[in-house]
Structures are given as structure tokens and as C-alpha cells.
Amino acid sequence: MQNKTGNHKGLWIGLAIVAVMIIGVMVLHHTSKNSQAASGVQTINVGSGNDGQPFAYLDKNGQPAGMDIAVIQAIDKKLPQYKFKLTLSDFPTMITNLKSGKTSLAFYQIEKNPERQQDFKFGSVGYTIWDTLLATKKSTGVLNTFADAKGKKLYVTNSTNQATLTDAYLKKNPNAFGVTRGTYTVEQIAQGLNSDQFNVYPAPKYSIDLLNRQFKTNLVYGKAVNHSSAYPMFNKKADPKLMKAVNQAMAELKKDGTLKQLSQKWLKGDYVPKD
Image (cartoon, rainbow, N blue to C red):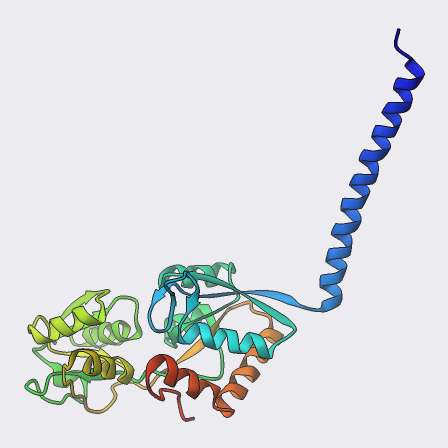
């Protein structure tokens, strides 16, 4: 015969244990939240690339690497009030994430243009020069303007500022020149130039130097058709305190030579804007 009193006692003990466990979990959760609040550290989701060497990519061990990643990490070290959490993707997805608020800040060699300035806010300190030059083989001749490219064939990479500039010129001057569009690798661009698939490549000095260094293309160029730099880009509703802190950190990194050192390490040259 079962002892009802004993059963009731066991039940109450069991319930008491469960209650203590629940209270313990709640206390730990509350303590953790209080600890985070007390530390004053705010997590900031930062977007960048996952396949854009040497700017932002995953190395052979699956770890984030590249110029932009190094800049993000250098800023993070200067701002103890923030903890940067990386969200890596291709360029279009990075833009979508920033616009939707999934990330608050992005670094991926982003240039200013009117369309982006409508949707986002930019930092005040540029970290890579992206003046657009019209690179050609010597046999094609030196070009100083898009008008000089009349009748020629250009290659532009999709979603870049160079593509935007090219399209803006063609809008005012239809059929001025032919355009090949794509997401070619550096090797494919070199092959295209060498085979005359196209004979003009609007690009920054860094990209031209890379082609000449790696593939002996011996490209030449004239005056810049556009002056530009890469900047941090913020969600339009980004916290002004975050923007001010990042701008200040960037200014310090430029002044103390860190940006130059990172450029020389990752880009094999000093491509930091002088102003």
C-alpha cells in the first residue's frame, strides 16, 4: 500500500527543486545582462566581403583576412566601448544587409556616388585611393577622358563605381564605345586586354599596378576621369556616437601611419589618400 503523505512530500520537494532551478536560470540571465550593461560594451554588426582578395576574404583556414578586415580590426581595438561582429558576404548582399539594418557599418572598398549617398551615410576619412584611370596597352594610346575612348571597347566590373561612371557617360553619349560587363578575375582582365576582347579598362591605380606586376601587361594611363576614395559606409539611421567614434579612430590610424602600413602589407604599396 502506497504512503500518500510520502508521495505528497516527494512532489513538493520536486516542485521546489524545479522552482530553484528556474530562479537560478533567471538570476544568471539577469546577472549576465547586468554585467553587459555595466561593461558598457555595445556589439556592432559590421559588413564586409568574403571573396575579394586582397581586401576582404576568407583565408585557407576559413578566417577573415585582407585590407578591409585589418582596418575593421584596428578600429575595434581603438574603441573599447564597442565590440565589432563581422558579417561577411558578396558585395550586393553586404549592401542589402546594411540598408535593412542587419549591419550598422560596412567596409569593402566602398566609393561614394549619388545613389549610395541617398541611401547611406559615409565616414569622413578615406582609406584607399580609387581615382578612376583609363588603362590601355601602349599600342592603344594614352586616354585622358571618356571622350578619348570613342570607338573603343571597355571592360567594367558589375556594381562598381567604374560601371556607374561608364553608364553615366553613355547616357549622355549613346554608342560612344562598346562595353563588356562582368565579374572577371584579374587574370581574365589581363587575358581580355591581351586578346583585344576589350582595350580600355577603367580602374584605380592599385588595380592597374596589380595587372602590370602579376601579368606584365605594361598598361599605361593618363589623367584621372574621376577622383574618389574608399570610405566606411553606415546605415542611414546609424548612431551618431558610433559614426563619430569610427571617424576619430580612422583619423588616428591615418595620422599614426597604421593605414599606410596596412596598405603596404595587403596592397603592396601606399594607396592611402593624402588629404
